[in-house]
Amino acid sequence: MASRTAIVDYVPYLIGALGVATLVFVASLFGILTRPEGLLAVLWPANALLLAAFVRVPTMNTPIGWFAAFGGYMLADLMTGSDPNKAMWLTFANMAGVAAGLVLIRRLGPDDRNMRRPAAILYLCLVGGAAAITSGLMGILVAIIVFQSNPAMAFLFWTTTEFANYVVILPFALTALRWSSMMQVMQATYDEFQENWKAARAGLPFFSLIVSMILVGVIEGPSAIVYPVPALLWCALSYRLHFVALLIMLMSMWMMIELELDLLANLPEGADPYYGVMSTRMGIAMLALGPLTVASTDRARAALVERLDHAANHDFLTGVLTRGALMPLGQEMVDHVVAQKGRLTIMVMDLDHFKDINDTYGHAAGDRILVEVSRVIQRNLRGSDLFARLGGEEFAVLVPGIAHVDAQGLAQRIRKAVETASIAAPDETRIHTTVSIGLLCRDLEKPVSLDGLVNEADKAMYDAKRAGRNRVVER
Image 1 (cartoon, rainbow, N blue to C red):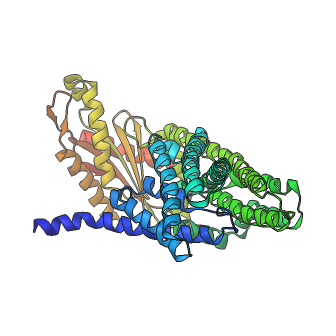
Image 2 (cartoon, rainbow, N blue to C red):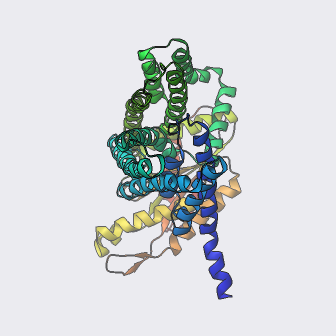
């Protein structure tokens, strides 16, 4: 039984190793097919993708995962005609760069690895540079042992090529959505377009990028490399970071193939191709940094705005809506229920003898009770219901579309849940409290003010107080 459990424990790591081998093999094969005669591959996504996989999926970053990566590199080279000695040295160079990048990237915080801060682009550049230089140093050995070529040129060419690949591919690989999330985003986009054709305007930045890429192929010359910059900046300000990173990767890969193959085709006989190719690859990598920085900055700004909006609309202690946030959201709910000629339930709740609890156990204990009671109430609500702290120990709940008997049952469940909750004071004393609830159920057919409905429920709550507390009173 113990051995079977041990085998089960290793299953995720075996699956991870299989994923690593498949990823490296497919990516390496793709890179080999873009390799011009006598040069390194125009595109080599395997190293950046492997680095990102080790960062994002811990079950892949294991000794067996590294052996699987080695096998993936070797198999791709051997299948395309490389001799074993050459394939082994090339694999060592690739894996050395990945190892160096992994050591550095693991020192970055989650915000930097996920590009939530503008400085993250700089850090990823440094990671890519270190990985590229490490591969370049290994490239010197490869040049001497395998190719008997100029080691200095091998170092420069290998380093610039690897750096360009890391800069272009790593941001996408680190931020890419999982398949299920990607499908949800695509479905939501399609649904939005179905409901409102004007949503198609969101595709204009993407369309402008396509046009600029066509211009790169049509209008040749030294300036062709910068044609997509305005469109990329527009995309960076219009789309989410993971989509911008995808666009930049696809554009850069296409430009590398288009411009480099064009360069090699028009090279004078006997001319050295290395400097032109290195210049093209580094230029495309540098071009990608600007839009990536803009997209990362915009993501950080959006996250800050979201946090500020949450702080403005949510109670700092309990995390539920404030009264100021409830009233406009609640009025929208009321108007929607009126339009549907539906039913709305409103509950106003007030903790019983809360002042006595504060006086006896202290305000810290009172705060704990407010937090715990908020959690108890929320556990009984749906995601579509509105829940707010009106102030002090008073709360309000808006529940649309439930029957009268269900509303009564919900109010009683909340009351009993609060009554049975046991909250620990700072000195570990167990505290119990109760709640008085004013319940209002209305079929809404005409426009009505939320203020008026809340006031009616509030009066019912005071009736519950006068009737002895810890009860539900309906109006």
